[in-house]
Length: 617
View 1: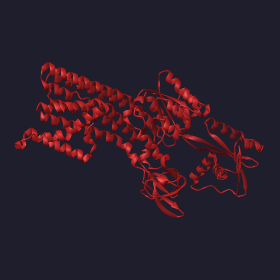
View 2: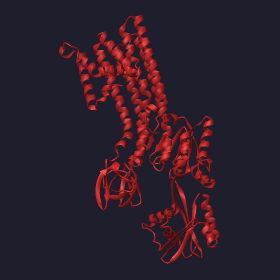
View 3: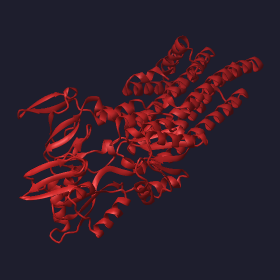
View 4: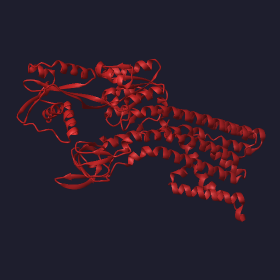
């Protein structure tokens, strides 16, 4: 509002201090100076206000608080109230300064992401290191990251062990151990060891840049309720001018007219919404939530139903071994897993990779390298391991070898399939050795998250493309009673539309490309920012940076608290304005006290909004 704030913080503080000193000298008439020193406050704090008001009227016909303040300043000077004019200018400048500081503090948690991208990267080529600008890194480049350095791009560690501080992306307080084969993200910090990595996502495709694009669009001005407050402010300016003119005409006292102009400036009303919205966005950011649409909080506060995707949302979206069962006396479970892992070592299939990863995690070393390896399309793989020929595959492979599945193993297979798992059988040419079951594991906090969302008075539905058996299994564990399985993207969209046709606001939570239509159609879309697809994130209003769905209940309650704060701010500011104008018309308030009362309201609104920064129920 005040151009003074375009200066740096130190300059602004200096101007405010000088203005305060000049007012103190003027009030006590220190030194009996020939000129009223309050003029210094008018020049330092008042001139920028008047200049901004004139520019707003001339360039945009913007009738806002600056217009009333300027009129009050000029009127006070004309009637000889120099000290009052100086006080008005100083208090307005202080109020605007506090507003700026609060908004800056609210956005600090968001905007710090923008400054995390390192300017350079250390590229390794033919054994030699070369430092280049980070934006010049190409996919496939080998980078070396030293202890204490910020990782420039997304990639996979190829050499070395370390611990990475991922707090800026996920909110985790403790560093995460990383080794060969682990993914690392741009913007995170290498804390201990040196490691080499292969660049996978660079430039605008990196995780940090994706988050930055979301951050940069986080603008409280997008909220519809802000526009409403602005329209009210314009009408209040008109009412104030009319009231001031009528009071002057009826009473003949210009002091009362000037006081009305001072107390009826709609600063508190205009500040009521954006400060609360920005504080709410700042609060969400601290919990790993990025809000790309300012009015998303307004819409979320009205949500009565939350629809969850399954894979990658309620589950981790990564296959892992859930069961190993041998049916051969020659092979125990550990030996069976080792045999199947060796057979799958050269496989590029996700199931094979998951089995190999499980073996690595358990044994801390890779499986035995097969001498012979062959892919059998639609069946599985065959391999020769230390002279022993084995097969790993599905029921079709069993049929090809004319083998019979033992009854007990068949029952076990049916049980794990009913739970949504996939089964890989290990066998040789003579017999079936056992099975390895793989499943997409549930997030540890899924059941608690669903319970907390329901506790907010919000209904929950599961929308998934999985088979009914797998969908119902996950729903039972999570505590969800309303399930729609076998959903294509258009089916999820249709389900969202059905709720909306009933007049219910719906929030969709998902991560994949198939979720994008539903995320876009829902009143509020929440995407998994870590593992979610680019399309899903772009379609959503909100992103969970660390994929922590446990924060959804906090987000819902926060949105309601933000709207409650906005309503309190609006009601309080309107009440204060009308009470002050009545006191000004009756002559109880003079311009000096009126300026103080007006700015107390503005500061109170800012303080009330700032309480949202650390709010958590």
